[in-house]
Image (cartoon, rainbow, N blue to C red; front, side, top):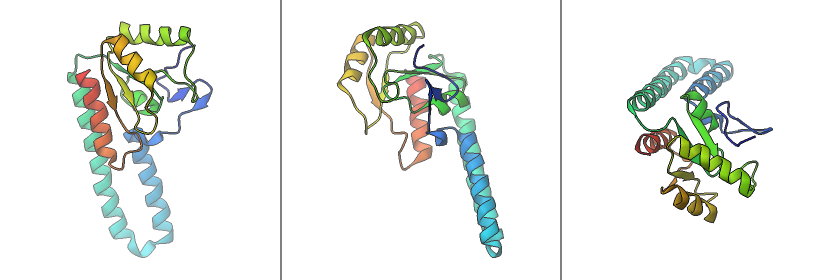
Length: 172
């Protein structure tokens, strides 16, 4: 059935990387604010002020990503080794193609199918996570005439991680 999905769902497993979509981060921030207001009502002014700053930064990043992607003539998708970027893909109307599914490398037939779909969209490069690099990623990049880029969905700097992902799509 293929390993790509814009919904953040991959096969029968759920993509846990919900923080890679700014709209989800915004919602999580609102929930955190509400819980903190319940347990720390005396700090409501600073909590609200900090949340407004945070919310503004998230919205600015979201707008920056939308503008960069709108100007790009490059593919509206990307190829990853491990399917961690489903929510990011859904957020921006992109398609995530994945080599690995549910922690397993694909069969030769599945790999050929994914590579053909990625090639048909003009995708040449593959993203790998520093935690999950693979020799197969090099084989895939070589077969597409592309490069391997390391992108960390678990990076400490969330803003930079999303900017880097966006730039990789634009630069494909």
